[in-house]
Length: 172
Ligand code: IMP
Ligand code: MG
Image (cartoon, rainbow, N blue to C red; front, side, top):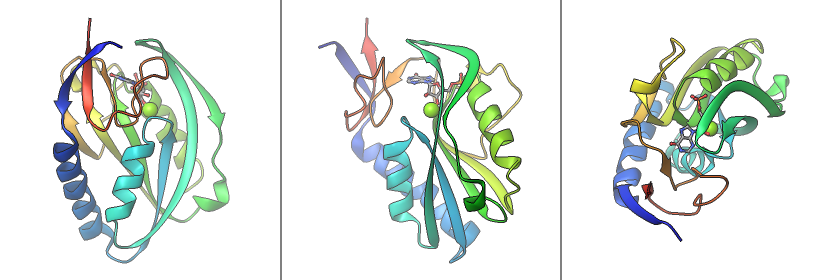
């Protein structure tokens, strides 16, 4: 087992997720909102966000892949599509775990926009702003982080460490 340093504790994540949910609650009130969770990394975040959402929250899943090991390949593969009927004419919040180069978010935004939602915003837990290659910024983000490879709370390193309740950095 590698040594992992805590970057954000369970309590810090919980506090920030509640703040983000409050923003969405103010924005949408009791309207119907489709949360599109990108698998697998965003699954813990999407569930916690949805639990705090007070409107008519719906949940859909999408799976794309771009990462191999610790580096983004830039080539996005759609592994599990969305049902366009669930998106068309709806308020949509794309929920991401982390935005790094931005290739994945750019791909997903275009993919969802082509299904003609009523409105579309993006909400990421983590934003590695300094690593951005594509000119795209999430509408909402939990924490802006440095160029560190993080794991836990859904995020993996070659499928490991998703189950950690905190976000941490693997010590090499
Ligand atoms: P992007 O296309 O380079 O922005 O990469 C975004 C995707 O890469 C995220 O949705 C994550 O699945 C993965 N990713 C990027 N950085 C990390 C990290 O530090 N830890 C784990 N996964 C990461
Ligand atoms: Mg992801």
